[in-house]
Length: 443
Image (cartoon, rainbow, N blue to C red):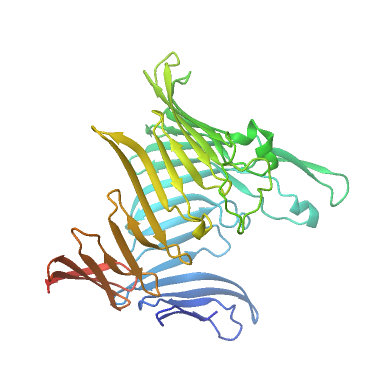
């Protein structure tokens, strides 16, 4: 792919290395706004064959200015140094030598050069758990094992250290019998069940100050395991750092607790493949009288419940005071977009309904009109790039806002304030989409 033309006629361009013995490396990406990201590569070769390439520089041109990052790799080593446009180095060390490519065991940050007169700022050191890789036994060759992050220690230049430690689910066992007798392995799903944060200590991490403990729905209900829905938290409990931890906060989650409400949608809608869908149906936040204090403090559950349509879209939300918000989805859009929201009735002093609604462009999902609680309608139009071109507000205030796009880096907004009085403002962007200037005038 060498280019992509977008609806307004502008395009993305991609340039590649086409020299002899090239590896087809990406050399430059040019954006529709005139910015460019370009690369140079260092190539390792054997004779006339190129076998490995690594980025040597990356230059970003924003339409006016260029900034370059350089990447230096130690041959046959396990470190790489990235130098930013201001001359500051970041040194990455990978786990092991030659294997575990891309698994970073240490990152050192410098103000200035890492080898010259620069100043070391901090170090982040990662630890990992080795996971089984049956592929190596299958091919009878060495290959890196998957690595799972288990902790991070941050060390600052003044010697202070802090630590994050991760604990994972109990996992599962499996066996590989592709060659010979079965070989059994134990692994994990990669779900974090506990994450602890330590205080700063001088020369070593300080004591743990908080731990977030998470249990998952699948571990107590095998239907979710059978459906491969593994990452739904059942409870999240935060404890302090005491030897006998005290509970500081707790949130509990419920799923599929109520029968699905019929949506009436039949187009492109079939029955769910499993007995559970993983729809969130309740969130209970525990209100503690004295959090982080022994013994376990008294708690009051504040529960919000949700009912869900058979399309998976939320139908109602009821808070802990039994106030209900109802969501409706027009069959015009096959139940894809919220078209009406009915909020709880209030009485201050007389009863009042609170309803808002919206209409959409079916193809893009963009809002084309919005009706507020006073039945005032605001209309929206867009161009082929899905950018707003006009917003017309409801009476009695009326008014409108028009947007114009003279080029890919300029946005003009004309706003009618009263009668025939308009404000006219311009925002100018660089090639990377960052605002670089503003101008306003009356028209």
